[in-house]
Amino acid sequence: MSIFARAPQSGQGAVAGARSVLRRLLETESVSGVIVDVAGKGNGIPHRRLVHHLEQIDRSLAFGPVMTTNGARLATQVTDRRVAPDADRGTSIPTAIVHRPCEAKAAVELRKLHQVDPRQVMVIAVDCVGTHEASGFLAMESAADAWSEEYVESLRAGEPDSAWPIAYRPACSRCVDAISAVADLWLHVIGVPETDEILVEVGDPVLAERLGLSASDDSPGRASTLAALRACRSAKRQQDLDAALQALQPAEEDGSPGLAALFDTCLGCLNCGTACPICYCKECLFRTDSVRMDTRHLIDLADRRGAVRLPGDAILYQLTRLMHVSTSCVGCGLCASACPMDLPVDWVFQAVARETQSLLDYHPGFDPAQPIPVSTFEREEFETLGEH
Image (cartoon, rainbow, N blue to C red; front, side, top):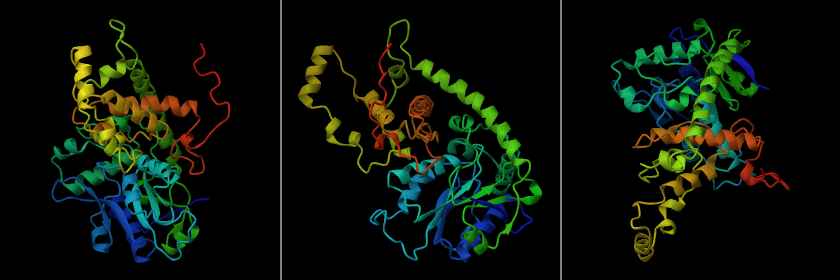
């Protein structure tokens, strides 16, 4: 059962309030380091850094408006998988990592896949209403301190749309989870009065005492602000994903699969898989010779068809990824952000994920104890599948 607490008032806003909590984590040796966005020089993009020295915390941005990497992938980097799941970690100190809701959900899925060890990683969850594409953010002409506080005020109000000239990433605009369901410590801003800066929620009372946080009640306006945001985003999410499923249907004029048309310009660069936190395999099948077409077979295929597309198997790659990740897709949208052809990868994947997750009654990222469907076997499951 988590408890609410107040961070020491900084008098300088939510960004400084979050820094005070991160600083206390390091000072009390509750963590060995903190992975958090750190402000770039000038108008540069904030980048994740593993911070060990306190002075670097003064440049941290827990509520950063740009996400270039899903933090769950970084959590795997600070997890020593040579340690057996049931081994005693003794007095080892975990590494803290600041996660947005989609990152925290992905970390839960990777826990189930034994890629992230909760004994080695402390998740600090921050509220989030959306992030911007890095390219659009670079075009903004504003100082770091100005945009960070401006973004936090939009976050505090639970605004579904960006207050800046650049929109949130498409995946963010249809995200309904502004807070994380699973974490060790939360830094809340949505619906929290400006005078309170941030509201801290801690899963372990011992940790709250060690950090010197004073007990508090939940902010009275937080629930209603979150409900309003969720209602607005839910409507857009349903509309967007319904449209995606319709686009996947065969075209009436020629019967060609909609999926093939959507991915017709796929370059096969595999960037989307690289960006996806659920694609954790050390060696992807599509980076091996297993899928490389034999020269003689390629020539024979061209003879029979008249022409054969090169490089090929773009749809096979996307279908394989859908099969592997759709049940655990958390909708972070970084697959689309990584695509050089601006293909709506996340739009398609989220639409399919909605159907598979509903079919399996599975909610990724919400319950660490709920096994991933692909790791379980249910006797006489889907008995009516294929019947009309």
